[in-house]
Image 1 (cartoon, rainbow, N blue to C red):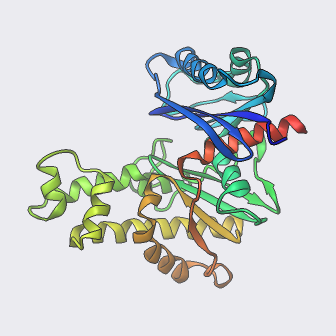
Image 2 (cartoon, helix red, strand yellow):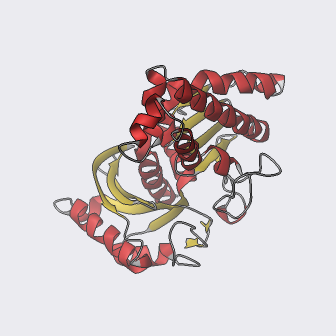
Length: 316
């Protein structure tokens, strides 16, 4: 079994990534900018090329399947993407069927947040737990849940769209079309918008950055680490929003552990105290001390999770 390999593929709005995975570890990984203008056929071609490069020099029989994770909503039972806001042309697209044809391998299709949840549960911060909540905070907000030792899927495999519950009556419009979703308020995109608005004020770290280039969330982190008051205020605001959202999710899923992943988790050390303060203030007493930790697998969680699902579903 140690020699068995699977392919993990991650379809993102900016990058298409493919990895050869063995026993929860990345053997080799490739990535290309996603050819969004070329549509599904061009992107399938990217995955086929990367897979061929990874398979070169590997005994063909050793690779037993492939798992691909994509943004949702998608129907994982039929392997069909229903609608991907960041990727035009993927409406009702039979990705499992087309990918299986392209690779000549059995293919499993999973939501990217659910695949990352599975990766972290099996090989990352959630190992040994039966009730795990994973929330990725990046361009958007997604995630998944393990409940009673089972990866949660729901009807058509569309459960746990973590970013799409409303947190206020009014607010910014979300990519899903609603207003004031958790994602619209607290995702990295929203965090960056607040940072750019703050950068218009004279002086300070962000003002100096804005004079030279576009302000990004990493600039807020750097400024906060240096003690810049505006950056510290932005960190506190983001932590409060995340704490509010995490509290609601804890009440819904009753985890023994919440794992935070995604690009914004790079600032976890700065955000942690503020997140915990809101949870302890707002959560019902039994939920106030649920551990909140940073993901261990980083941006490999989805690749490892998808590849592992391909192996386990193939065995089943």
